[in-house]
Length: 93
Image (cartoon, rainbow, N blue to C red):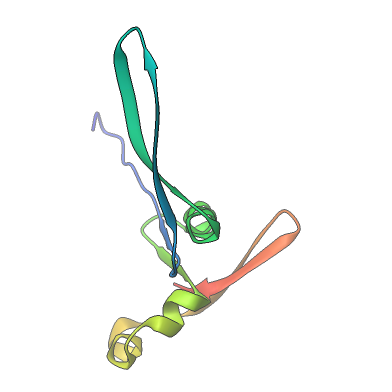
């Protein structure tokens, strides 16, 4: 758009998450939205922050849950460790 390229990465985790509806009412208008909460949502968000442009960075938990055929050489998964602040995050890209 306008000669600019937008690039982003994707972070994925696996497990149970809480989905809740939040919102407020102001002047008879109701503004509601759905929000994902919990450790899984927070971890996926962190992995999204750490993913390089055009990359999918998944947690070890997600990778372990994949069927064997999706872990074959055809899919070219690579183990990766990313650092942010005083923490490191292990996964696959």
